[in-house]
Length: 266
Image (cartoon, rainbow, N blue to C red; front, top):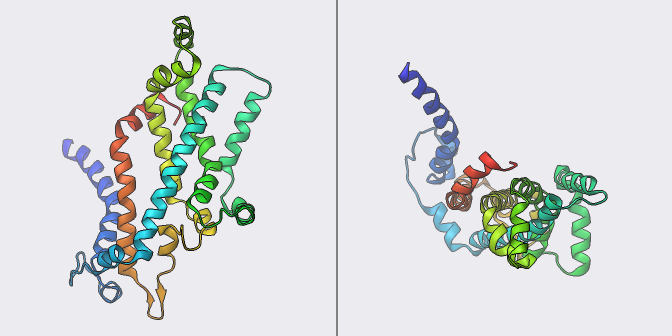
């Protein structure tokens, strides 16, 4: 019976890790080997796919561009969502529930709906093909998500904490930054994690709003076709490297994520 209890989680983990292993397996193969043979490990081990990514500016700039606009978006989204979530959590005003629902409807809409309006707007004001353009476009979806998550955490903090701080002579911003924000650090970590991950994996807006200077790695990966077909080994290596930033983020906020699922609105 004990062996059976361990077998089910083990099989589930193997099932989840199999695509990642196969991606890594393909990344160390040539395209000819991938198409010609089926093997559990590389028959002709090669690092040429990774070498091209780290030496070709088109490839490594794609990673730098993606990380740049993702970090900008995460900082903007969380910074804007914090005071907004506090207002929804602590105050009642005319239309607050309708406004809160309207914010969430932006998250429900597919990115394709906003691709053309953003393209025309950013082209007109000179923001096209910049990191800021993609970061601001992703705010349309990430800020409502961050507000929703943070409002759940803030509602769990007693209002007596605010009143006690005011009685002790704290100004609002001093109380908010020095007392309240550390209290909901778990919620901030969870919100930052989801903002980072959405912005990192989103392709349509990032591809539509950039061309050369700020082209993300996801867009670069869609342009590997040649007269000989797709460079599958190169695509696999690029895909394996895109997992690393997300893994780092998960590692650093893992404690906050665990608390978030236990305490917050996630």
